[in-house]
Length: 248
Ligand SMILES: Nc1ncnc2c1ncn2[C@@H]1O[C@H](COP(=O)(O)OP(=O)(O)OP(=O)(O)O)[C@@H](O)[C@H]1O
Image (cartoon, rainbow, N blue to C red; front, side, top):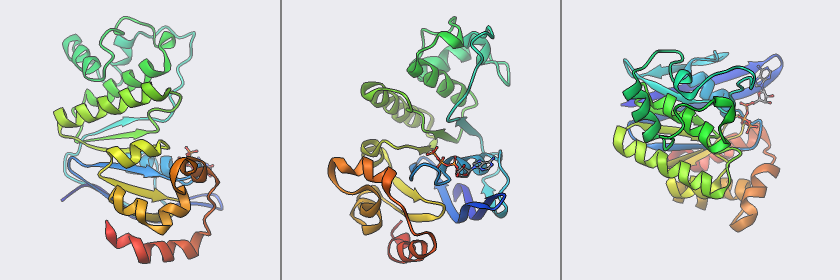
């Protein structure tokens, strides 16, 4: 039984079709990574799954009582607005101090409770967002490029914390990442999006698939290929899905 599934989603913004016939499902406890070039609809898909964006077509199915923890891609907090980490964790629902402390500890930011949100480093800020997302004891955590702006050690440490949180809470994780190393080493499944699902499956299978290689290349040039790759929309959708979609 899937925790959450998107079925045949279309999303349009005006005349732009952002998502086309996108179906994904996330099962309990698995780590699924969404990859794809800038503008390929990754954030849009997450927003549909959390209910912040209505698809033009298709539907979202959720397990009854599903709790979702969400870490957004960007959260702008006005630096002139006094807001401590402690008070931030009370938004939107007040939590006890012990609970807030436990969540910060779990997210690896145990020492920042009394600090101003505006004074946090990029890494600390992301960890506070993570702490807030796990306060609700989610069945699934969704993170949109959570290590954006973090250096290599910072990213690695953040992903380590995520693994530990999954082990402790038993939650599933769906994240957007451009960090191919992590995608390949830490995901149970990779979904490659470019308006449509280009290919998906176990990292080892996806990385061996021509559709993936076309996107990422091999070796160190892979990360660059990710940004340069330009799919022919309709043709590749059919082609890639035909060959690789069933491998998941
Ligand atoms: N509210 C909106 N109105 C119009 N266009 C939008 C809106 N939101 C998103 N888009 C467009 O939808 C497309 C997909 O955006 P989305 O943020 O989902 O992509 P992404 O894969 O997450 O990109 P990135 O890797 O850059 O974060 C983009 O072309 C974007 O400009």
